Image 1 (tube, one colour):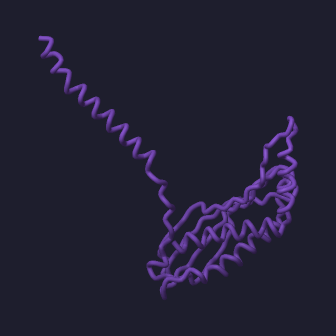
Image 2 (tube, one colour; image 1 turned 90 degrees about the vertical axis):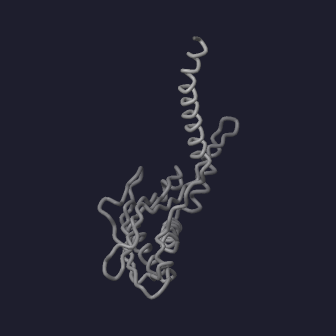
Image 3 (cartoon, helix red, strand yellow; image 1 turned 60 degrees about the horizontal axis):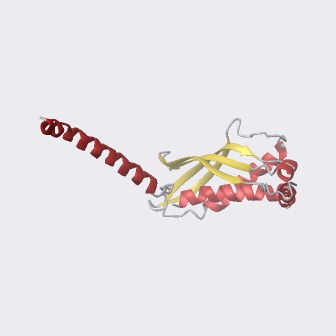
Length: 199
């Protein structure tokens, strides 16, 4: 009788073991699976070349921080981004078919020279990109293209003295001018957009 009882419970145990093994295998596969690379617009491989490139700024895109952003600096950045996008659009060539690209800036965070130098505040640009053909059909879209220019944040100490803060201030001050900050942001962001279009 005891032997029969064990036999009756065995399928349940086997079933539980199989489920547990399956879960472990699935979790292991997820952990070991490589991160998938973000797919590009693939317009070049489909025979498209960028014909027009337009830039707009979404309402509320300019984000203030501890130190308020200078509207003049933000306007300079937007102008620079638009110029770089149009200049680099000519590099996206795959064939005679025309593609039109619209970029909408959704987040503009330009740290002031003071906030960049003193607290290493990051600056960043985010935007959405839509690619259409000559008839207006959407060929590809990408939400939240992002470029972040990180400020140096050194937390080193020496005998309890936060020397890292001083080192960070010196490092950040070296790249805190308007021209340097705008160039890094504009070039970094436009390179991200063009790289996605070209993939």
